[in-house]
Image (cartoon, rainbow, N blue to C red; front, side, top):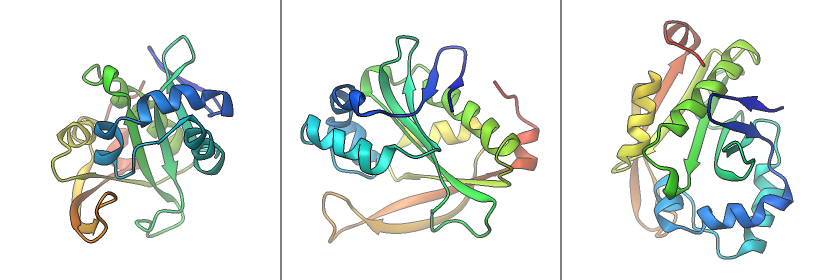
Length: 179
């Protein structure tokens, strides 16, 4: 499945993307605020592609040249699900591309796919305390606050980090513009 927006191509990951993935996923300013450890080398990125990113609802976020600059996905195995027709939206973007509205654009396409093609009724999302970029993305998309959790920090599991959980329903989405 390939999704297109005005500026982006959302496509499946492949092992040949490992170098591009490593370029952005090795940056601690990208991974840690999103809840994962930075990649340590290209082979690590290749293994992440094989083990985690090669799934039907996981997409490389690409500019028109086809090179990945981020990731966006729908997780149907999230613990946040209360019914079968719910999922969780996750995303990250390489630092050179921040502030251009690319993730909200990609997320609009993926939400359209989730609600109108997959029949999802509720999409969950979340952001860690202090991750104002992710909070703003969710606000732009119409996500509403639901609850707060405390989860272990990926870089210091003995410490807890606050995560704000948000959600968007198909009914609410119908009132917003789509790509």
